[in-house]
Length: 619
Image (cartoon, rainbow, N blue to C red; front, side, top):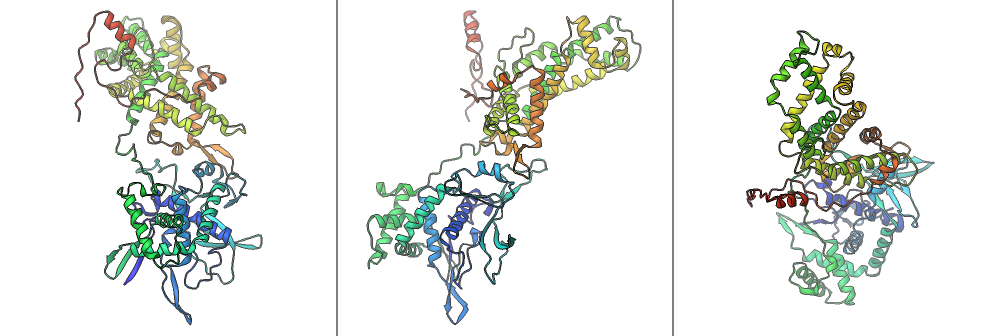
């Protein structure tokens, strides 16, 4: 009967996704860091002279099946070596680090440093231990030992001549791109990036301490490993039994024995080890009272976002971008110009005869009862965008939109300027993410109800107005050459003065494209990280530059701020993040919910009592 060993804290083959699972990716970073430090600092596994086992590969799934030569006269005859010292040492170090909570060799800095160094020329960067990090391998490869004689390279190893000194470059494979899948394809495809490893100086200190602990109590670790091997019940499959070994349990049991001053040469050591193993298992199951070593137990909290609906609805944002576009045209007096032209045609003042232009005017008049009117449009602008146009009495205006909109544009503008400068950055990617998320949630919330059908109708109305006013005969009758000259002339002559057409056209075009960007980024804005926003990238020399996508967004924001006369000082004052007291993601249904205190007080003083709304059924 043969035995198969599994080490789930190095590679867990039962997790969905296998090597691309987040847990296995974390395990692999720790595995590669320890493997590298053992080789670099202690020359362990660098020049392996054990004929039974090759050096450790960069693939943690291959950490198994150690062998030893059974016949010294015939090295080809090997038998399993379940208690190989190199294997036990490796597991003991991993177990100690995990027990102490040092599972990440980068100390949560890998994403930050990868942003700055992922396109550097060197495959790895060496730093002394006084620096903030010791080693970074951003391109998924590691240059290590000189090439030994008669070396047989594996598929993961490439020999590269460098300055007449051969060095070994080992590739680590790939990992899912932290920016997420490529959404430019349909369906979205998963992107991959070089597997990155960052080893900071603090981790090296903890690793050295773990190595010293193992060296001092190596015999005790070996005894405990044997005990865990025997204690594992295994899973039989014909003539094979599977034994699962926990590195964390190996460290926990050994530390208990060290505290109890247990001698590894004690004749009753096996019974003592089995007793301690039983105590750790009972403690972990909750039946051991306060006897357990609580530092040995991991903390796993539920994912609060699991099973929830997305709080940013892209369709709602697309509807609101149409409303925003139309609101700026309303401010530019496009709608009022159409009404004036129609009025002139109805009264016979417009000097045009039968033709396409007059046909469009006639259809406009006949469909007027079915079309959304000015009062309804202005009420929609107030409820969705908080724009107080005219004397519309809207009980639930979007009072937060203006501030959230300006903060997002100001943050994008300042971030764009900082990317290519050498000054200290004042706006982080997370601030852009928060400002965009706050704005997108607000827009999504006010995109419910009749906003979508109204937007569909209004985009058709806008196109119909542009077609009408672009008619050659109508333009000629007013003595202008294009539709915007017509709007300016009619406004100046009949509507108490012309508006700034360039300003409102720029605001309309830029604003709707900015909201469209938010809709495209809705899944990323709904997440807890800004990694997928794609704000910065690096050129071949390691210099930061904005991505094409962020460059376009920043250009739109700059254009909007410029035409509204926003100074740099005003923009900088609005880049600091704000803590919102409440941020609803769906409309609230309930008695008097949503009414401002002032409105409710006015109703109470007037003696007006609104009918109670039906209660929302509890499912």
